[in-house]
Image (cartoon, rainbow, N blue to C red; front, side, top):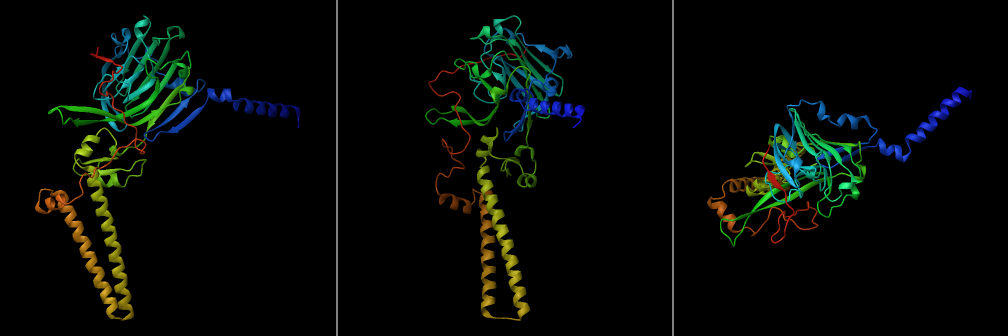
Length: 411
């Protein structure tokens, strides 16, 4: 090998070794993870995408950039921010979010004392206290297609000397969510969660209203979390960025055919009473259960099954009749078989018609007859611990004091 060729080969070999070194790989690491509702990509500090995903608010229209005066000077407070666009979050279109001083955005409709529990977008949820420094601010900017919220030079209340954090979350009108980090002075895993939860990711839940039998006209609202995205805290450092892309959900389908024939990560079902497609787990869970949509799904599945079975039997009858004709056979056994199958087919069709009629006319004589004789207490779905269903937690259990956020007016 000639000297100059050998020199290039050695340089290429050394470059390959360097690029495969664990330290350098961590700087440029691109991680693509599927979270059912979202896919996430993490970009290292040396990746050009990290710089591209950071929004420089200083270069934006000054009239649209707002420094929230209350959030920038208080601790554990939150303020509503109206969006100029529809933001899809877990398939639900939002026009309003709540920005909190603790490094996260609350997305729920019901504002309660423990906003950190669920329904959040958290680039870095922690015990931040902007009132500790005059340089600490909470800024947001809406350009019509994206909302950028930046926690700028904020300090941890119980670890002020660790330094200031600067990071942001960007909500795009197409449902994309970007977390970008400019200054992270310490490892996130080392941030104390004693006085405040430390989270990086997303969460959504649905609200269920319970009637209290002992107290008339009083209802209790309980929030159940049905999904959570937890990003690796070890991947979050200064100069990193995370991009989350939304995946299709059942809520996007607007017709029965497209809903039932959908091929996505979820088992979509169509509810004719609500004219809605759902997996049964979204923010409309209360409506889904109150309108007996799970029962309707079961009836519809039985109806489709019987129709398919009838079609199969008709095909069998046609084949049998054709075979008998071809053989010129009028054996009584063949005729009896054909008549028996026809009779069974008529009975099955009658059962389907009665089922559909009773379901859509429950107050009729036939409907009341079957309702009185059905097995009692058939729940659409039971939730048990460890049953494979999403973990549900009551936000405000009775007799237990909760960490609170005080909601303030929008500036």
